[in-house]
Image 1 (cartoon, one colour):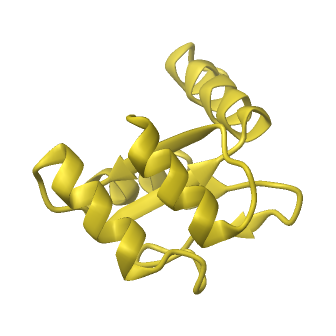
Image 2 (tube, helix red, strand yellow):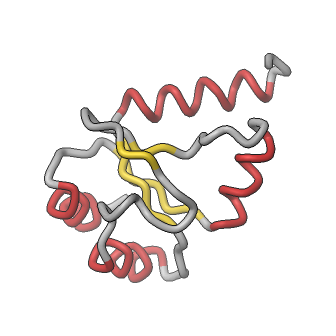
Length: 102
């Protein structure tokens, strides 16, 4: 993700972010089914902001969404801002699921 989107995310959430992920609603639905309906898509910083399927509880503003759409040249349903710890946790859960570990 380019620095322009990273900078906009920092302006919007007023906190440093380590990664940005743009996902479609269909991907979220699949992830939720795979992890037995658990809330698996989470944007985390010190304040642990939970993500719904449509927004980051008021954290994500249209400015960030529009920038993401312009940069990846495709419509986006969700823009997540995450820190390294949250990304590592998400990857670890995905790896366990792929290895067949409950």
